[in-house]
Image 1 (tube, helix red, strand yellow):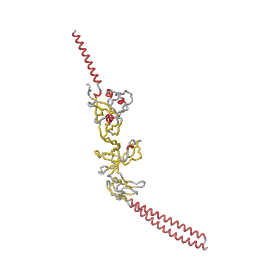
Image 2 (cartoon, one colour; image 1 turned 90 degrees about the vertical axis):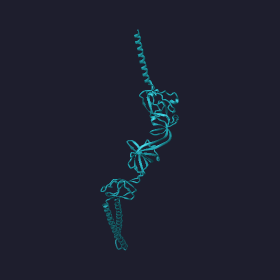
Image 3 (spheres, helix red, strand yellow; image 1 turned 180 degrees about the vertical axis):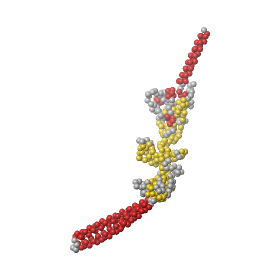
Image 4 (cartoon, helix red, strand yellow; image 1 turned 30 degrees about the vertical axis):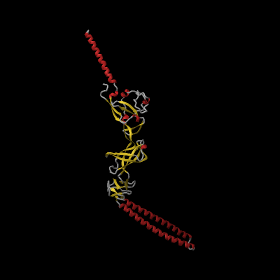
Length: 421
């Protein structure tokens, strides 16, 4: 009998133990989810927010002159090289002048020949004029026939035309001589400005041909202490760009430095590449230390709006969304202000089942974290101001609900053990 009681007691003990274990497991499973997560936070702060438009561009001299030649020939001498400083009128290169000089001499001979022809035509006209006058006098005295008088006058008209033609040949010969002399002067390649030689594209002995277009021999930058950055701005952002805006440029050659620039021009001509429309924007940048060189790639940030001492939250806090378990454990709001998602007051969101409409506040809600590290509420940003990649200005009712120093959740990680253990 005692053995039977003892066996029954053991049976009840085992059952109770199993029930306790099941309850313990249920407690672990149903314990509040917020105790199973750790949140990384960033505080609400006050400070400056700078909104900017980013782009890339290329550095060029403000004034760059391409030096070419208007005549064909062979490079006989070079007097400058890369990086050579030059003055206006300075000789840069010399083409072989022999061929050009011979053309000048040929033109001079043609002019002399034309002048001699004009002199002969003048003498013939003088003789024809005297003959016509004498023939008319004899005809009036009835000493010759009218036909002889008319022949003399026709010879005069022909002589006058011959003289005009000879004079035209003289003018033509003078023009040819002037052109030949000008071409000879083109054999001397001189600098049109003060500056520095950025590029030299010819060598001694090289033949340059100017038959169809002027070949480029040198590129000269007028002033490298003032440079410009040419950048392409997307059509979605071009409306926010105005002349006079401040910009910051970064260069791979000087990764630790920032260079201040100013928007000087927004060009109207669009440029379309792969169906993407952009507009050229010109920035002027100071280069007194001559650290920047033509052709460098600039990473540009054009400042379109800037505000100081504003209440701000991190963009990471706006991107944060609590785990589904936490949302399921939170109490739905009872106040109409807390449920409409527009007042900016602290509220917990309503639970939404599958197929429900998206929360219109998504992307505009920040989540508060209390001193114990748990979510304590949320604030809907009903109105925001200037923003950049890091911060967003808080305005409206939300600015009354948030205070500097409050911690906002930006990410979470699951704890190894729940707080309910």
